[in-house]
Structures are given as C-alpha cells and as structure tokens.
Length: 387
Image 1 (cartoon, helix red, strand yellow):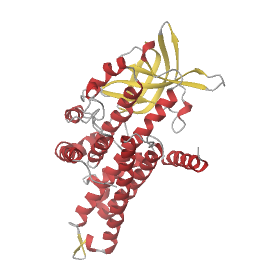
Image 2 (tube, rainbow, N blue to C red; image 1 turned 180 degrees about the vertical axis):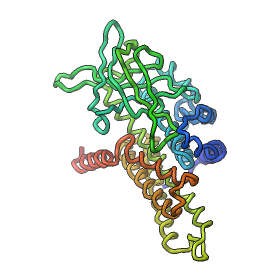
Image 3 (cartoon, rainbow, N blue to C red; image 1 turned 90 degrees about the horizontal axis):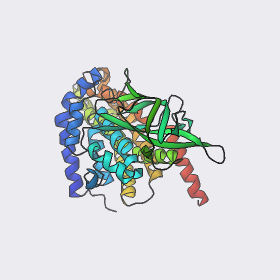
Image 4 (cartoon, helix red, strand yellow; image 1 turned 135 degrees about the horizontal axis):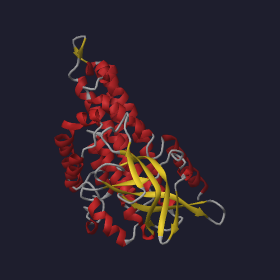
C-alpha cells in the first residue's frame, strides 16, 4: 500500500492552498456578512483551472485524476465553504451529468465554456416535496412539436441564479413505464429560455456567499434534442451523479474539519488562562488529539474512495461512507473548535463562527446522513447475500 501523493498531486494541493490563503481568505468574512456571491472570485477559481479539472483536454479540462480534484475542493473548504460549494457543485453536479451522459455535440457545446469560470451550470433535482425522496419529483415534461414542454419548480439549487449561471440539467416526470411507475427523464434547459426563471434564495445560515436558487418552469420549451441520456433514465443519471457528488461533499467536510482544527490549534497557543496557554491543559490537548485522529481517518477513507474511482473500481459504497463520515467529523471538530475559543468562538470577528455555521449543511445536502446510512446498509446487505 502506497499512501504517497505524486509530485503533480502535491503541486496541485500546494498551489490551491496558496490561492485560497491569498485570494479567498482576505474576503471570505466580508462576502459571508454581505451574503454576496463573488463573480470576480469565481472567475479567479476558473483561471486556476479548477473548473472541469478532471475533464479531458478536448473538452477544456485539465485531464487530472479524481483525487487531485478532491484535494482542490478540500483546500478551498479549509478556508471558505461558500467558494468550495461553488467549485464542488459546478464540477460534480453541473459538469458531471453533461460529461458522463451527454452526446458528443452536447459536450462540445457546453463543456469548454463551463471549464473557464465564466459560466456555471446547475443540477435541477430537489423540489419542495422531493428532497431525500428524489422520486417525489412533480416537475413534468412532454414532447410537443419537437419540443420539450416543462412545468414545475426546483429549490435549493446551487449555481442556479447568479450572473454566471447559464443553465441547468432538470429531472422531470415524462410518463409511466409498463408497470405504471413514474418515468423520469433529464432535460437540458438554458438560461434565457422563455418560461424559465430563477430566483436567488436569501436568509441562509450557511454558505452565504454561494449562489442558491429556486428554478421555475412555466410552459418552458426547449428543443427535443436537449434530452440528456435516454428517456426514462433520469433517475439513474441523477443518482449516479450524486455518487460523484458525495466525494466532493466529503472533501468539503474534510477541508472544513481541517480548517477548524487549524483555527483551534492557533488560538489554543495564543490564549492564556491561569497563566498558561490553554493548549497545555490536558482537556484541550486531548480534544485536539481526538480531532486530529478523526481527521486522519476521514482523509484516508475519502482518498481511498477516490483511488477506487480512478482505478475504475466500484466506489459508490465508499463514496457514501466518505460523505457520511467526513460531514459528521466536520460537525464534531467545528464544535470542539468553538468550545476551545470560548465566548470568542460565538463572535463573527472570529472565522470559527462561520465554520460552525457552514458545517451544518454537510449532513443535509446531496443526501442526508440518514440517507447515507440507508445506502451503506443496502450495500452491506447485498454483499452479505452475495448479490
């Protein structure tokens, strides 16, 4: 077993770490306070080559492996979850379905511009009554005069409404199969299409500097050729996309945990009580030791899942495990870090207050912790039964 990173992977990690400290950290608190999505910062992330970095060069990507991409998300999340969310959602949920299921014509039309940082793409799955139950989709679509006619809405959609958003992949009910079950299909909808509108969502507790939107479809018409994949494969496409997305959410959890740990370590070596730095007290140092151990376990699990994917082995179970464990560890480490900061940890002047808020979505988005346990338990049962 070789746990060493390649020279290229180390270079990417170090470059993104430097970028995050130099470009993101100085403005993260202000953007969070203003709940402002930064077009400028997003374009800089694009200039770094972090959008579509796992795509082949023919589509505008960097041709990098999964682990390199996941480390990039981790390093951004170590400083600011909002920017990490923009990066992760665009790469995994936005670009992913187009790359894995699009026709060659669709790939060449959309992917090159989506790798620049000048355009973002959304993943239209969640609805007011369809969260964990993705098959609760009520948005409907049918073909009329060689066009898809779409009616319905989506909610909590990352990268859906900013000035850089240019479209979304949308799951809709398009009929029933031979057994009378709903048939789900994915359709490409571009911004500016008549009947398609987006509304930014405000008042968020977390990821306040990322773009979260509601999408509305009112007799929205798109060409029949905007079908992504095949009719009836929508649920398969969306759920397989979430397998990849779980890796990036795991990376966000890991990065946030590491960032919270760093803040706590720094503070515990600066803050004195009873004439001593608080790190010298056993309670503090033991809490930090436990946190470091959990972070190490989380990193090993997530990186193994990436290794499995890069080696074209089944990785869905490990992706769910990584998403579950990394998001839960982010919660635990952020909580410990706030406790170490004491009253100051509850003040917006200290970054740990933002970290504590940002971690909360990780146990909800892209499959709740409860859904991850359900997914994992099903894999375990299948393995036991030899399926």
